[in-house]
Picture (tube, rainbow, N blue to C red):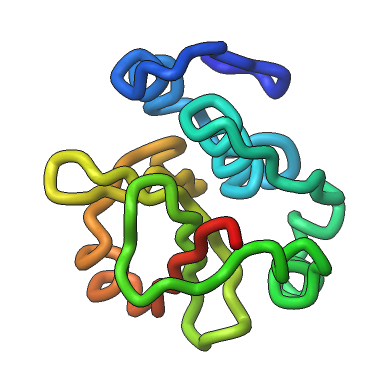
Length: 141
């Protein structure tokens, strides 16, 4: 099991995914924001700004934080995903409550974590249809 401070120190996606896959979800410490930041750092050499865990745990402040964080201006929306894109998910554009990272292998999968399954890979179409999420992809400006 991966602990909160886990840092795999690899740019090998397969090794990274082997280390992470199935890691249990934790609302405060091992949530979608934690996983996205870890994947961005380890696989793409990008640092996501630190998030206040207390805000991430509550859905309303999380939505506001994701939409209004000043560093979001450092990322731009793209119409179609590319490897390493941050995938924001929610029912309404601009009010996303969940995030993951788009990996361009095997036809494109989103690395994300949820309470029921822990860390997993999902096809974007499945997330859009099964969960009725609107997917927004961002890359650094």
